Length: 616
Image (cartoon, rainbow, N blue to C red; front, side, top):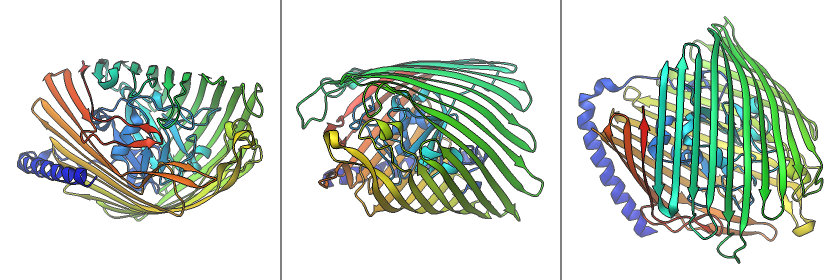
């Protein structure tokens, strides 16, 4: 590993100084390129607001960021741009849905199996399966995404139960300009990995349309680890009149995959056949002194596993919120949420019975700004679950803008997670489980320099959790109990430096210290990236270093599997021979690191892919 570290450090130094030299030369001739923009987010408050005024830690990833990485799926791109987050993988494609599957998301050392502590949203609507209790990671394709916003830390006051550790809000594309836009692309790479996609957008007057189709497939890096998925998405928008918009969408994902099991066990082929669908209808209003929305959503799925497990589930809900901009400098948001989730499975404590859980919540959230400098935020959510009862979720925060370029933030927030249908009634069931809870304390410093071409963020946090659910016993005697607790503290740092129009760097670092051994949560994580364009050519280079990472945790007896530290180096070269055509070649894991993220599932060595992207 020392050899690889030295190689990486030399390479990075040369690359940095080469890019910096080019950037300094071009930066002098492109000084007028920098435009001071205030980053606007919606996820931290449900309305468009400056990120500086949100007391929680919020990150934003643009469509261009994701395209530069060349990632087919959104979740792996999060590691590159967001500190304090780690997403597990087990193959070149295909995340999986079982305990040995991937697609698990850890924020600040908080996660669970399956993934239920981090809430994934699509356009603000919650995405998770009523039976398994976690989102379908393979369905989040990059071609549909306008941007991704991430709340690092509990956001239960706005989004309820599963937002205990944080929120990932995938905001989909919508045609904004009149006319027709088409984007098609394809790629081929190692392990017979193929991707084909097409999107179409159309707008005329008040009507807008967006549609996409994606197909991904791979033979996998080992025998019987192949993967095949089709995704279709359609979105319609209509401006009823100025300030009032109606949006409807529908998506469908169908995939089959094989899993040969960990390499250290006798191969036992395992097949999954899953269909997931989503539909939503939203009515949004935005007027001078008030904005809000009324949203309805319906998620459903069918899951057939080769071990005999079959299930169908659904997740239905309605969300109503309105923000009032009062003349005294106060923003007041009030809202109500209702959701019902559950389904039928042929195994478990209540097999072949329809299991439904209802949640009803109301919340109020207020912000007041004093002297255009100090913003005070406070809110309270009251949520009732038909199984475990009522939960109170408070939040308090302060934002102080010392100058236009310097902001300090602090907050105290509570997060909670109610048990899933699977935990209550299916695998290792316990109908008496109580919600998990945590309290998050954090302080942040946001700084802009060099006419906002350099942006920095530093956050320190402390998370205290209790009632964490764990599986006790084995076989038929296995059951879940509220046994766990933890005390996590850490530091998160991120930086973006736009040297000139053609050259940009980004970096983030996270340090996690916990009183418990945590699986899939590195002690230290470093991500570096740079993007350079010259005439028709482009170069994107990224690196990731992982320190002290546990891929397995078993209790009782208490045993852990700590993986060697590893360093990944990726590069992607593009060329635009014509205005509408982009060609690319990408190489991943250039240092040929041998590593595992899920225990017994070795990740691929050096691998390549190449393709084209056509926009007109």
